[in-house]
Length: 162
Image 1 (cartoon, helix red, strand yellow):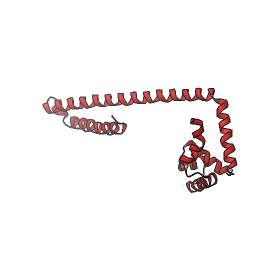
Image 2 (cartoon, one colour; image 1 turned 135 degrees about the vertical axis):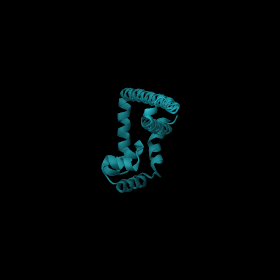
Image 3 (cartoon, rainbow, N blue to C red; image 1 turned 60 degrees about the vertical axis):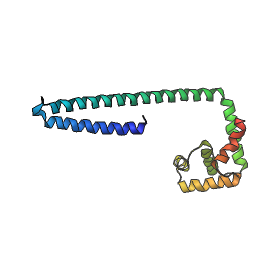
């Protein structure tokens, strides 16, 4: 079940349980009535469903945490194995940005674009307005002769990937 629908279903069940509890409390003087017994059974089923839903959510979070930890470990190992190559590539990219005569600000924007960050993310990271970042990105594309973010990233990644 999709996380969004799981949350909606959980909220609906929780409201049902709360309303059912209020109704049973209001009818408490007739606890032996069939109506109260049936409502109690319905609440019991709803509570069990909530528990199962949350067990599923917890299991999903645990699996996601495991995947995240595994990926972080793989990334760390990759960086350790290829430390020298990565340093050489960073230097080569900076050299190319200098060849295009980018200002330091434009170079930082270009690096953010190559990393795949949105204009909004780059603006937040560099503490600049989105308009400033858009203008600098336009200058990066103009000075480099690239048509956009994908073209800029492909310039560096095509030869690496072969």
